[in-house]
Image (cartoon, rainbow, N blue to C red):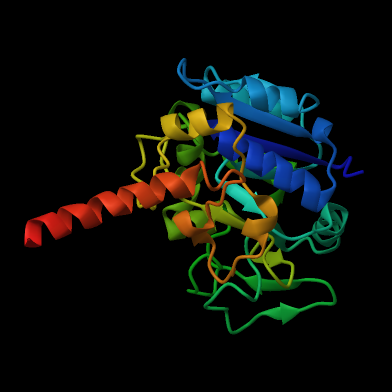
Length: 294
């Protein structure tokens, strides 16, 4: 199943979140673990051993030189590639074989996004409705996310298109996944010049959310929700004692935006895990306010 597609997921210092990515992807897509490669940047204080034991058939690449590792993984991939980041959680069933068929049938489509759908607002005015998917001209819309063709969260691309893009960027500039995305996507005019296929597609509703509760790359100051106790070391402790992301509970949450915060970061051991730590933090703040006003 899905033998024409490979998944490349990037992870740094987030084993609990990577576990959630892999668990939800496999559950909702039915993809074989052997089709997935995890490119992991290790920290001596963060242990990925439990993730590797849980997903033994996943191919594990310990990142050295990012560009070299990236090219090797892409060269060993199938004709279609789904990129992923470890802060993504899939929330709805989807058919990867259908996604491949869509890309094979319409050569104008650059990628099929699993994070977009009509539930993500605002929606472009010129959507084309097909039987099982929607498509649009990403060069002619100013709707946020819908005009962003190159991203690493959850879009399926042709391998040949990825290699063509990488050939136009100096390898010395590709230092981590943030550069891989930003060097192509951050300049809209440059993006239009680099990418010749002018359409994107998605299923009618989005299939994932990006839960932004911590940041691991220092080169790009991406925003994240810091209201919870979700630094990488605290979460590593939670993971080591058996705490996991509660995929069914997260899947029931409202999904009208792509990036969500701490309210969506639901753990299975809720009483002893994330929510207890979050409650203690807020109780501490309340006590300080009361004490100050006495």
